[in-house]
Image (cartoon, rainbow, N blue to C red; front, top):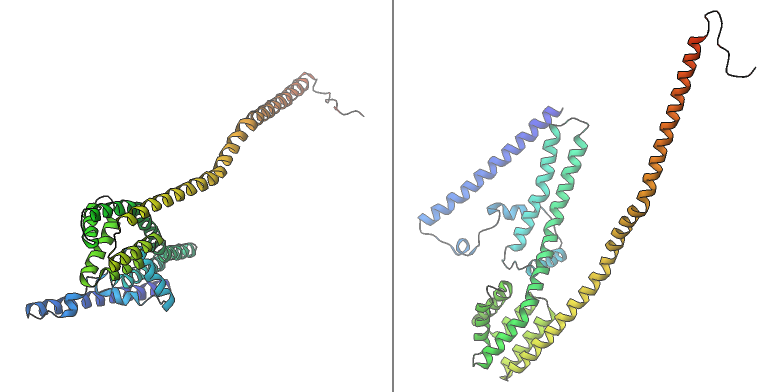
Amino acid sequence: MYEWFFLILLFVVVSGSLFLLLQRGNVRRERLESRLAGEQTTELGSTPELLLGDLTPALAEQTPMSERGRTELQRELIDAGYYRPTALMEYRALRAVLVFVPLLAGVTLAIFFEPSRIPAVIVAGALLSLLGYSLPRIYLNYVARARTREVERGLPIALDLMTLGLSAGLTILASLRRVARELKSAYPVLAYELEIVAQQAELRSLNHALQQLADRVRIPEVRNLALLLAQSERLGTDIGTALLEFSTSFRATLKQRAESQANKASFWMTFPTILCLWVSAAIILMGPLFYEFWNRQQQTQDLFRMRIEKMKTEKERREKQLPKHEEPASDLPQ
């Protein structure tokens, strides 16, 4: 039975692999022929290269998702900095690969193991598949938090540089470009966001670019800064003093957050500290007692063993000293 199942599975895997390879070769050949013929359509020229190639749309459809889940996942991708139009499709395709490959590998490997180990192999494949489904989402949340922290750390410096640029006579848009160039090495995430703002402002307007910045980077201070810059651009007022005060206030806010995190860290560190102290104190207090008890027990057992051996030796000696016609007297009283 297992041989037939293995043959069927091998046939399906080989046939599917050949079909995918042929399909990929046909697509490449069509693209090459269109380029040689001078036909370069807008779709081929504008579509970015996908993560898993032409198989990305098909793999993405293997994991169903509701409209609400799609919206939430798109929001998380934006928070993590993945702004490509195909980011959601590539994420779903990659997650499908991480989910189905361990399952197929577990089923395939189960054939080569003994029947008693098949459930363990299948469970291991299922656990790896579950990790493949959950780890990409965890990674997105981690990257989003890291980007948020980097933007928060670099925002006061960016505000100070913008204040210097505005006081030197530059416009808001020119100040944003200058700040983006200066912060590219120290805070690349914030510099990248400011570059996007400058490009969008050139295409449409500064108000629209600042609104898009507030939507991408979901930080209250960034939204307040966008409103402040948009109002200054619309009314034509001097914004240097307001930016300086905003930067000072934001630094105070960051300091308060750091103090709050430090207080929380000291509170949570009490539990491992108490645990470690309790273990060490238990070893110091109970260790000598346990050693003494174990030593006394060993001494008692050795003494008891020596007495038993001595009694056996005396009994054998008495038996040897008795005459042959006499029987040894019983130790028990009559």
